[in-house]
Amino acid sequence: MTSIRKASPLRWTYLIFVWAIILFVLVPLATTIWVAFFSNKILSFPPEGYSGTWFVQAWSLDAFRSGFFLSFQVAVSASVLALCLGVPAALAIGRYKFRGREFINTVLMSPLMIPAIVAGSAIYLFYIELQIWSDVQFASTVYGLTLAHALIAIPWVLRLLVASLAGLDPAIEEASLSLGATRLTTFFRITLPLIRPGITAGVLFGFIASFGDLEKSLLLVGPGRITLPIAMLNYLEYRTDPTIMAVATIQVLIIAIALIISDRYVRLGRTF
Figure 1: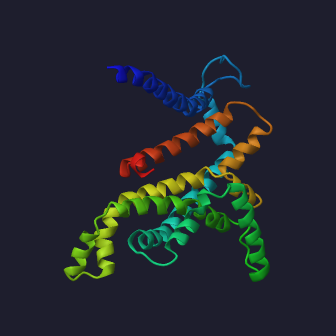
Figure 2: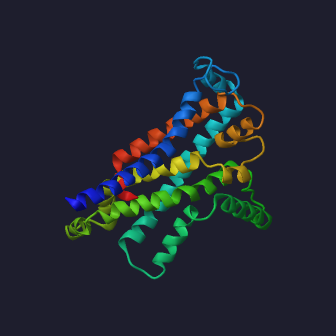
Figure 3: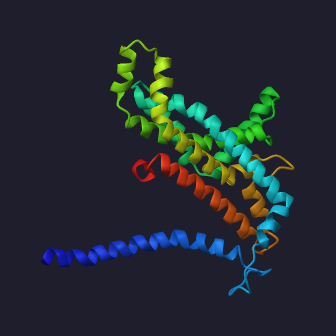
């Protein structure tokens, strides 16, 4: 009984700490969504009323509209490219032991550890040197930006696929091979369907990471083109009306949908 009484204050302290962190994360998001519906032309509290006109205003601005389409295009392309590179890498790292395995895994996961502005600067300088050497332009092009964003997406695809492979019994693949199936047939008929949830979650996480990226895009986007995060940053330099909150609300909604779908396929709490 004494031990329960002693543990009770500690438990309450832990719960308060957890809820404080949850509120610290959720309150800014909730405030952003709330402010997006203010009718005030200048951000102020309390609101004069509520309106949805700021969403229409945001869509009517070419910077937000073109920025959204470019961000969506680059995020989808980068996710697909990361999938093409991440699946073979995950199979090699998750299924085989070879010299340099940990080094390759560290290199592929490094975009999560290197500051984004440092990585963006390095990629930009590399593109410039590559253009001087080969006369092929990568800097300030859509495909150059897509390649850079693929580096952001690869760690998520790799991490989720390796986690999926860890939960897959190798005996199932061995049984397929022992029954006469080739390795290629075994991959497409056995392995691929079993790791499909991890592939789906990895692609969606890669999309989220690319869609919300600002630092790399600032350095690599071409003239006359802007991504949605850059359009939002430019807008904030001159105006403070709820239009920016409406854009942020749409961005949060898209990312939330992707996270919900990802969690449907892979229990993210178990993965991370």
